[in-house]
Amino acid sequence: MRVLAIMGSPRRNGTGTKVVRQIEEELRKQGDVEMTYLYLADVDLKMCRGCFECISKGEDRCPLKDDRVGIEGMMDRSDGIILVSPGYVQNVSGLMKNFMDRFAYTNHRPRFFGKQMMLVANGGAGLDKTLDALRIAIFGPHIVSELAYAKLPWPTSPKGDVKQEVKLRKAAEQFYRAMVEKDMRPSFSDYMRFRFFKSVAGSIGEWMPADLAYYSALDQYYYDFRIGAGMKLKAAVVMRIGSLFMGSMAPYAGDSKAMSGPATDAGDGANNQDEPSFKGP
Ligand SMILES: Cc1cc2nc3c(=O)[nH]c(=O)nc-3n(C[C@H](O)[C@H](O)[C@H](O)COP(=O)(O)O)c2cc1C
Image (cartoon, rainbow, N blue to C red; front, top):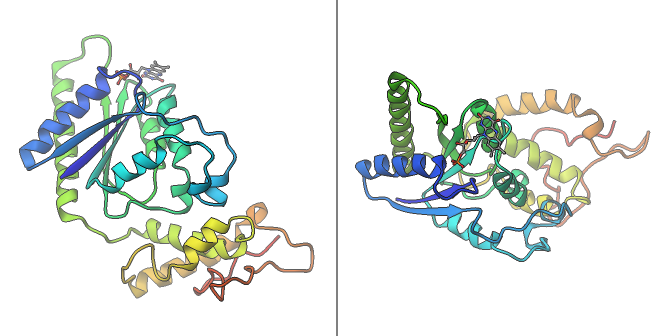
């Protein structure tokens, strides 16, 4: 298994590294593992300038020429990704946040399907919030395991330390098992995300052409997978209810003209499913 650990601490020899080395040890007990540590502090990943080009027009339009594409390739070639961040002010580190910003386009157009992902937050208090942030770092990989690892700068109870080691072992085993099983079944929220973006892409294609192109090329799901009738029905109901709450987020087309997706090569835009496109308020 090829595992890529994306390290969010500026410190190469900090707790994050120690925790991931322990995870690596546990993974190796399960089978063959090729581990790569990618320290965000060591790569050239420039600070996002906020132009929004990657999200609206496509990631190839990013004006920053640096290691982003190379990192994308590293993720493509891995079976599993471990995202690691120390808790900074009950959030992720600045390095990890910039990584998230530079890959924010995956929020709109997920990729790295079939990869399993483990999240690791290390520090003291508020690690649940660090994990909350990591959960929305990249879209596409399947989050299968999470670990909040508390390591304080003073001695802690041996009993608590043992508990933590057990937690680490279990999280590592879960991650390895998921890489072997490679379960491609989407969760309901994955499917909802797809339906929502596909529906919206048709209505806002003029402003978000990359989303329109991406979703127009897709039919049932992000990848070839037969979605069950029950899940489709449930999603259609949720979409209908959701459209009532779109409110000020919906594109505005004046008082009388209702918005519908702009005509495109895709025929019916990206809206070829059974929910309405979002209407202007
Ligand atoms: C800028 C900064 C902010 C931090 N904020 C918190 C915090 O909110 N809560 C906490 O418990 N620890 C906090 N810490 C401590 C780190 O989470 C802790 O030292 C962590 O283990 C460092 O990870 P590393 O050794 O992998 O770099 C902070 C540390 C720094 C440098």
